[in-house]
Image (cartoon, rainbow, N blue to C red):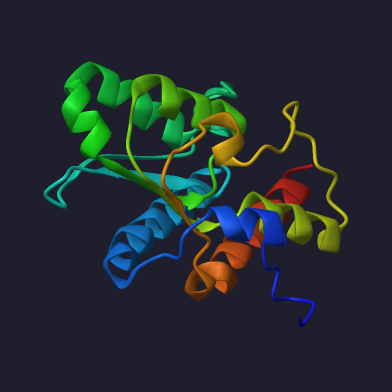
Length: 182
């Protein structure tokens, strides 16, 4: 494997399905939202909630830095929105698409609300590898758990190799912005 391939460890790769061609437009929208987040000074994360008919019913981007609230992840906000606006059956049939794999907090919210499938463009392992490459310490207060370790039995797909370079560039833009501000 080349140094920049950043594949998932075998154990996680075995547990996450491949991203399908039908998933790609939703992941592209997630990356647009992630770019908006970076432009606003937030981390590069964007997510969309898609109903069983393929319609985007809600979307959000990261808002941690601009609000000062470390729970303002887009995946967490979509879980909150779904709990208020969708029936349990609609939530179970919905798919959450996101630019980066759910953290344990967001995976737990997803599970508690009863949302369906998760599809992500880049993995947490890729993000850790990129940060290590750039000499950025990992500062999360949470253990890096796979989504399936938090929500057993949930259908998960990702990462999508097609988006690795674009997500890496967004992560680097965000890191550059942080370094310039300090």
